[in-house]
Image (cartoon, rainbow, N blue to C red; front, side, top):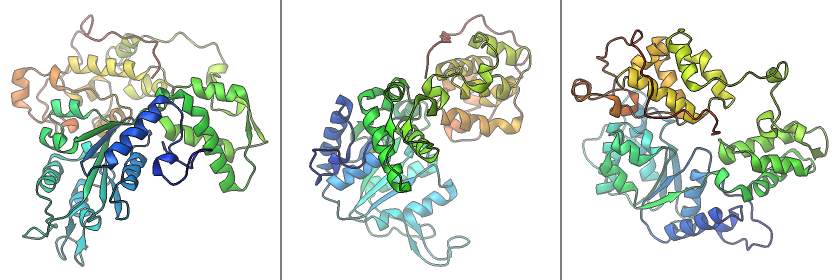
Length: 410
């Protein structure tokens, strides 16, 4: 997503020429990718969701000496843990139901080339151990085999949209695996860190989608560009690309005006907000009290407002911290505290992960409780052992260590 068709007046025989942008952030990432391509060292790409880490990995491969060999990518969170081992390392015939023949894994398939492990920090502890062993020895042992296969020569690139150092500190991700992967660390910039590039990217996406539909590229009003540049793009380039596609699909004329943009980008009130004057936004402490004292569910008190960016991510993290303080670090008890059903537990955790609002629970646990529950919840990869008592009737503390700003945008 950082990359696309070459810009005008740039040479076209170099993969880095496909990077669209004139900002200092883009110039820096071009130089870093070029430097990483000169060696066989492992690379860890970090950055928010939607910034283009996968394409950055492909450019490293294209610039490297392995460019004529396979480039194989896998999203570690999209493959169930029970299948990920066979996907990476292969399996032998009869090793499990449906294994009718021997099958090489992705590492073998990419021999002499490059393997890209996206969302590597979502691997289970067991898969982390298997990956570490491969990185240390280069040996492949297929599922169902009693011996290691021949050594495999691949370059490993990995990516995550989470904070790997925090995951290591919280003992969710192995420190030894992190240091193995993090030989070269490249931070892919968010779109809001490069506003100078928004108009170039938007016009490129418009041109591409218009061409695909066989229509003329529409012109863009100046106030549209101004609104796009002013927007913070929480979904980064992926979100910008989707907006461009939507505008082409719904195009009614040859000119895009401010009225064609989604309300949150154009700065217009949504239809429901236009019926009556908007009420003053409730402070996050009031929202927390609505759930704890008035027994309103998280899904009605927080979720709808959060999806329209009020409250913000910082506000939601504040709510989670308040809740974890009350539940002694237990996410299962937090589900009860915020009036969700027990079977909403996984949905709640997935929601926090998706929006990067998860909060490490360890600091809220007493030493005695940590000894009783060393594997707390799904953030640590284990089953939640939850010895805490009910907290619904506890008196809330007057303040927390985090201040609710209530006004910031994500």
